[in-house]
Image 1 (tube, rainbow, N blue to C red):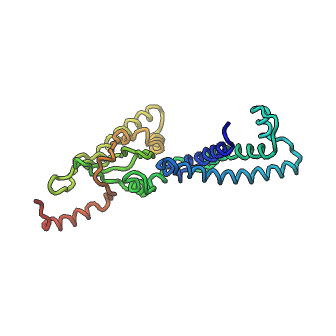
Image 2: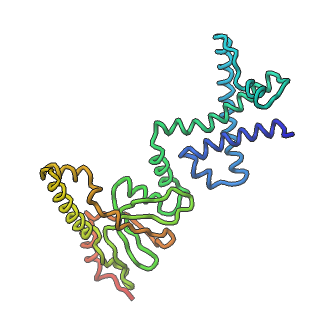
Image 3: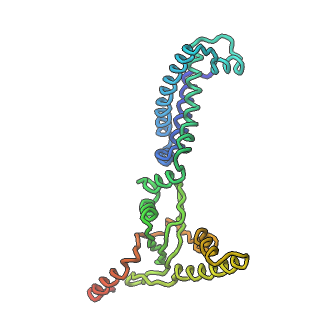
Length: 281
């Protein structure tokens, strides 16, 4: 027969693990741990929940006596489900507290995220976590500040674009970007050579698509103003940018940095002044 202490550890481990695995602050660190580290983390949190459940059980007993409520759910389960005949108060109390501990471990994260945006909190935690994959903090800053990132790949290809998607996983393998410009670095000077102006081409495609949809809406009976307002409120009807997504493998990114186009000409001006002093062999 399984010892009560083993069952108690089982309850503490499950409830603690449920909290840690489903709370954004501990989700990623928990999945990076293994063995006894995971066990001790889970049981430690489970013990805190167990103490909380004990307090709740005590108050429920006091309130039950005050309002003369004699129903005991744990006692009913032990008698009718597990078919136990002889029960002492300590066994029933331990079962009730354990059951409450398991319920709190599962329900607490669910209730918390009813009032908070789970997806954004997970993304924020992943992008700011020091142990997340390479460039994660840079990706987070780019998303927050709205700056594109310049990626230099191992084959000297260069992509400048906005972060579209980063998978919030421990073993993330790539990042998806909305491209603005692509090119390559000169073999000798490593200077950036722009080749494909994605944003300019996409803007033309979008403008053409927007004009065609506007014409169709007018033919359906809308006024030009109504058609214009409809498209302004629903850019997804004509925006084609996400159809040019580029997936960059993290392992192939040599380095990356934020790229502010508003100061690009200033940097180029300073580079031209320094160019005569730089010799490439």
